[in-house]
Image (cartoon, rainbow, N blue to C red; front, side, top):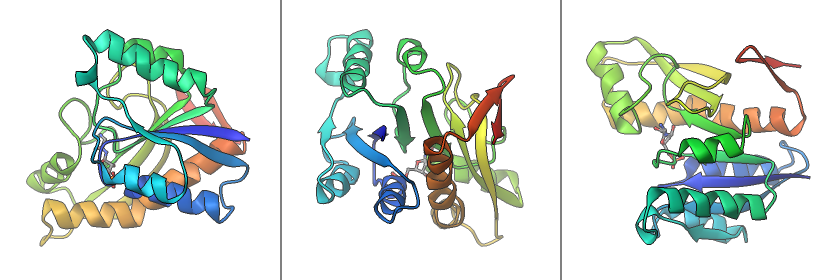
Length: 207
Ligand code: GAR
């Protein structure tokens, strides 16, 4: 049984897409054992409650330093013996210590085709605004492993989405979620659960 911990900050639509594919059996032999938010009122926590998944808030301001926060988060997942940590719209930057405790065991979804429109400062609607400002005709989403950089880890899956002249950041965000994120995130987790992901020279090979 693959044990997953999920980190969230907001609405949790990616969390929902993953739950749906676990519940319907598409992602085999997998259980979400914990959902952790840095915000008490994140709707993602409501979603986890509906499925009796343990949900809690662990936030930086409850600790005297970032080091202590990071240590608490790390110990939480270690105590649960998680096999994979999934970032689903998590807007806190993880420390190097946290990331190095789970090598190639943390996945993230980014709402663009990496290496475009990614890195420091690119998150949520800002990404889609930047795509529109640049006049890009294609965007999409990327699932990747998390390493110590921002959006620099091995790419697992990507899916392209059209940008339309009439798009606002909000409209484009919805299209990228519906046509890419909610599809490729569960797919990437399924590949992980089936032990089909190999990493060679910082590149993912799907077996
Ligand atoms: C998603 O679009 C995700 O790609 C993005 O935040 C949104 C969260 O939505 N993540 C980032 O920008 C990370 N850099 P959700 O809470 O409904 O899943």
